[in-house]
Image 1: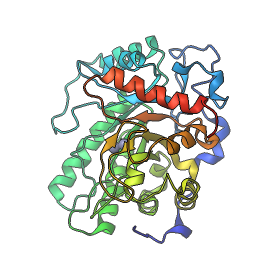
Image 2: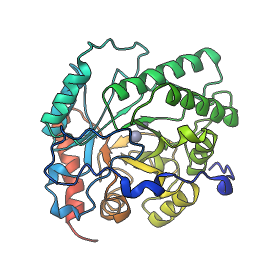
Image 3: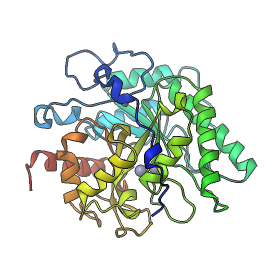
Image 4: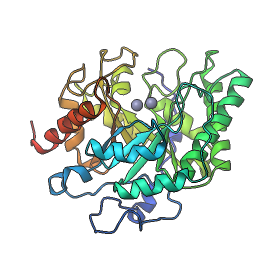
Length: 344
Ligand SMILES: [Zn+2]
Ligand SMILES: [Zn+2]
């Protein structure tokens, strides 16, 4: 595992100082989501800190990546169909460069659908083609522009977060890759204002892929100039972590101690809850249904019952086919049963 040796320079999150001013979307105060229009917010959305058993299941911090086939405004209904008020989506097909052409009223239609379905947390995942670490100037420029547009669409929809993979320094120059990635992120953040937070996703790593260790993510964060760094957080994908060598099965506390040391838990803004097809340290990224892969049941039980994480949104990216609604419902029920099932 890559050691960036940055522990003394690890950027400390600034959110801690403003924690008391954090918007609480899961307050259960009866206030309608529609009436809630906060100003620019740098904090990730947080769930209700009350014990989960006091909350109706459909208002908890669990959700899934849902389809936007037919239009982004259809995603909120799909989240409610699976019994979730948190969702992740793509604002365009993730494996094409083509930019979507939206009618001017798409943001309004989306806002209405979100309010109608009482959706609390919405984020996006960026295109898989974007490589902000690319050493190829043409691909880098194209990636920066595509990412800026991703962020602009998120801002137009007033999304809470945009998850991005830190990219690949395909020439093997990882340091240079980090510099390029940080510059691309800073440019996009400088040009697109708004409350959407950019979340760097932990990757399965391997080769010259960035983001495959906590230290690598910290080194990347350290390169983002402070005014923009405040709008950047971390997405922890359980499948990627296990594939990258973080042993959530055998050394759960050790993994979080390492995260705290390198990044600080305040920087953690989102979970992707996925089981893994391949074993610990395999560097292979294949998601599996929860409890049916190499992670098994226990890491998910611990995360769901861990008070440090009770307010952090948790999104499924587990296999959908052949029936996305049934599969998402199954995996959400798995998580809720773990939380309410008591300790092991
Ligand atoms: Zn991802
Ligand atoms: Zn993920």
